[in-house]
Amino acid sequence: MSNDTQATAHEMTVTRNASLRLAMVNGIGPRIFQNLLTSFSSPQAVLEADVSQLKCVPGVGARLAKQIAAAREEVDVTGQLEICEENQIDLIVRGEDNYPAILNEIHDPPNVLFCNGRIQPQDRLAVAIVGTRHATTYGLKTAANLARGLSLAGFTIVSGMARGIDAAAHRGALESGGRTIAVLGSGLLNVYPPEHATLSEEIAKQGAVLSEYLPMQAPRSGAFPQRNRIVSGLSLGVIVVEAAERSGALISARLAGEQGREVFAVPGRIDNRMSKGCHSLIRDGAKLVESVDDILEELGPLTSPATTETGQTVHRPSELSLNEQEKNVLQHIGTEPECIDVVIRASGLPASRVLATISVLEIRRIVRRVVGNKVVRA
Image 1: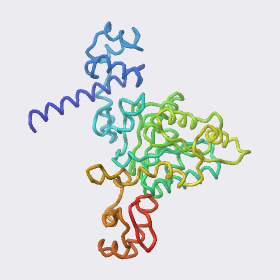
Image 2 (image 1 turned 90 degrees about the horizontal axis):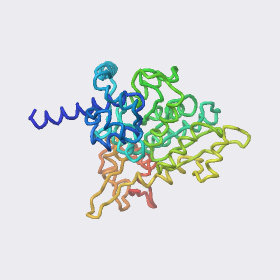
Image 3 (image 1 turned 60 degrees about the vertical axis):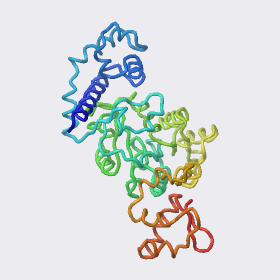
Image 4 (image 1 turned 90 degrees about the vertical axis):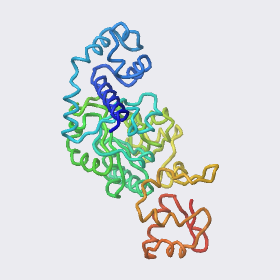
């Protein structure tokens, strides 16, 4: 390892440890953290500042300034890092390459995320499905079906792993073999609700479980509305499936609108109080959802390949999740209609497998069939 590489690695370690140390100071939320960085340029510089300097930062009073100054000696970062290592928990720090870029678009992104599983490039194409914990059979079925359909179309499903709609959405994605991300309002080693511990493990194998809270953090009521900004922040759009008039899912919808995300709502029975929130969203301009096609109509263009001014094809996020067979078939389909028989011969695959693959690519809105047994990129 070269001296430059060693220096860079040491710098990253110092920054990560300083970020974690600040995250462990009670009273430092995302906005105050950002104010501190604006004033001192780096987490390490924050920790090296004295109390009088810290008190000049907006939102930092005398008490918090003293806590930050004392954090250098009193906060046990090593212990937390050992807990993470023992439990295969990754630390994702804002500014590093593995931090979800889409989260940088919101005004109060989390500075540190704890992760079980892996964030992948295809997760840039994500949709959140949220709703009531007291879901009806109709709501649970609808959430699962939407998750399955969107997963097949190449979307990652994001939710909060709560009872009801959230859990149904995660399970729908898992059953279809798709990716899903859960954002917790507690630490990763203190899963809430506790009966979802197994679900959490399944999600980590096929996606990621995230939290901005320390691994052993117990659930707190105020943490759940705060985590909703991450659920919507990770997504291109938020779908609300069953929500009462004061449901937490409506907080996610409001945050989605503030963050510039699309808002969708599934209608329900007019005599069901769990439909009231969705109907209010639709009246206020949310897109009414009856099927996956309604969502793809809004977000579907993001799944098509684009061509730059120089003629270079740029693959959008949905194509990053294709398996080798799908990539093989797709590379023989261009922007001009091509006979399916030609695609079959060029791919070297059996006709039945090519036809099945083309059907999947159609569902994902990457290709479409045209007259005369031909297919073309969408």
